[in-house]
Length: 280
Ligand SMILES: C[S@@+](CC[C@H](N)C(=O)[O-])C[C@H]1O[C@@H](n2cnc3c(N)ncnc32)[C@H](O)[C@@H]1O
Image 1 (cartoon, rainbow, N blue to C red):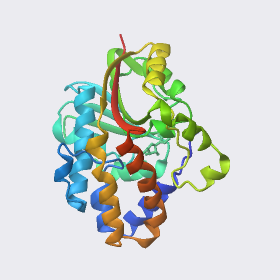
Image 2 (image 1 turned 180 degrees about the vertical axis):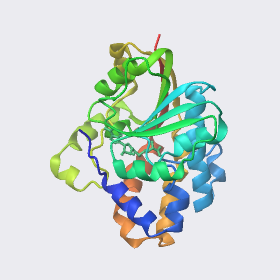
Image 3 (image 1 turned 135 degrees about the horizontal axis):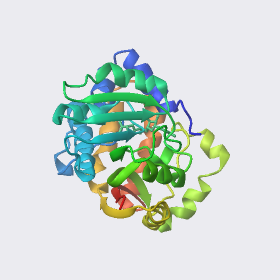
């Protein structure tokens, strides 16, 4: 079972309670990295970051290929930002958001108001034991959350089971270069995990692991997109946010994100990728 209450969500929820405007704008809807089509255009301001976070959702939704009249599951749905975005842009969608942390779902229920022809439901549960019947969904999204799941194998098996034939799973993940794996194995040490504000993380799924996961589950690997260069300004934004002193207590958490992410992304050791899989 994953950490139900991830430490960085404790932090975000406390800042949202305190009405921290910067956190509300940047992470109040989506809790994921931003996407800039032109990274040189990034402005390192809260509104710009909020738009970039929305753009990452749009890129992944385009990849999963949503159509009106379909049933969609958003696994690890955070504050419901992806469902909010789909609800604003599509009619006749039946959308379910699933999350392990009931506190996040409470916020999602309060911010997503389904438009007339859409149906929205938020359900508490584990991505590795999906509480849905076989062949329930046309599309499944898992935005920047699979690295927290207790097992990618279990999630892939479950995704295959609840997808209808012809259905698509799209996700984003940090995919390592095989050269980086030994460092990740060292990072499994328990004492290192104690220093980590992000709960259980597993960044060990290379492209060949994803090929194997798809094959074992019975899914076809459809598309892989390395968008590392497009997400890199995220680190600069968080740095700028810290300098502006939005919350001094956030320093350690955000500094560890920065230290881990930017150098690894620039060197190609840990890539941010969008992946999709089809059930035959
Ligand atoms: C980085 S956040 C991404 C949230 C959301 N997808 C977004 O893009 O805004 C990771 C999410 O995964 C959820 N999560 C972690 N383990 C989970 C599990 N086993 N089952 C379901 N959700 C899980 C967390 O509670 C959190 O909402």
